[in-house]
Length: 206
Image 1 (cartoon, one colour):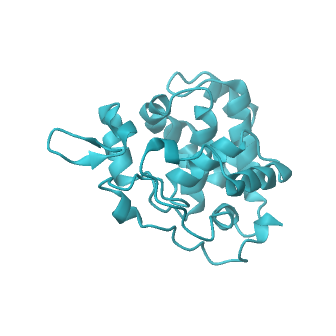
Image 2: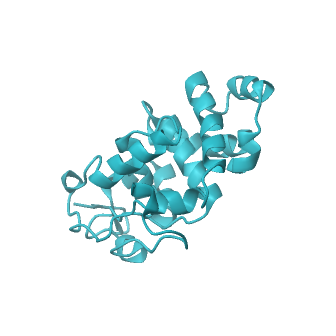
Image 3: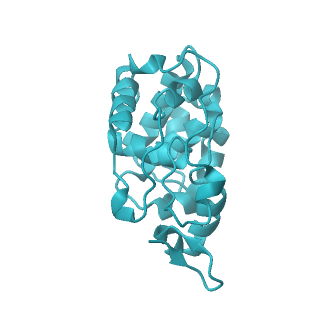
């Protein structure tokens, strides 16, 4: 079940944990993201979140954007050893060497995708909407689609992209709608994800 704020607005329970979550829940989480930069940002932040709370990452997001050139794929792909050293010295972000290197490596892998990162990732969006979740227990941590996405990304050289991370990405970018049934935002996000960008349909699953 959702939780009500002081004026009776019902949201997914996690949105009430901290004030920082409210705007993210209401204005961003679950809304479709179809541009390469936006998806690369979210893929990178989900990877950095591994082992940490999403609140930590959300609060550091402005610093991540500054550090990673607003997540421009071509720019991050060109980062060198000096950039890596700069990132590891930046107290505003998560200074984990493996994750920093993965972000740079993933930008290079994304730059090599023929049809772009957005088309590739959206090819794994479910064909049909799932039953509407009514409690947090109804929401899975991963799905066959997120497992397929993780495998395909790893085949193309991406790192820190397990099935759970990929499912969190799908939730955040509107590939699935996991707002609870009586959440104020669910209808705005839609009962099913929007279609993928133009490109070969579901080619990435092969």
